[in-house]
Length: 137
Image (cartoon, one colour):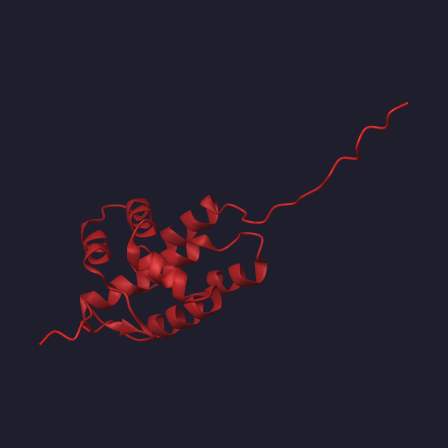
């Protein structure tokens, strides 16, 4: 009997996010930019963004990175979480300091992806202002 509770891959933190499409992206990627681009468009990243705040993502990713990889499928969620952090506003210096403090040495393309994220970051805040109405003489 199918209960609808099956997950693909391991659960890192509170979420099981190693979807088939994310797994394929990690396995077939030939450059860090290709992997980041594919994951940004993946439903797994959207799921993380819809259900976790950036501080939660950083916490879960930090915990995952502290554990040795037991199986290749454990790498996929780590890249998914990292790709989800690419949406963090570059003007949020506190969050970016936390992202920059992550030890990505166990992810083959962790550091290149972080550099791409930083280089491609787009501010999400805007400034609104109004011009005074012209006075009629």
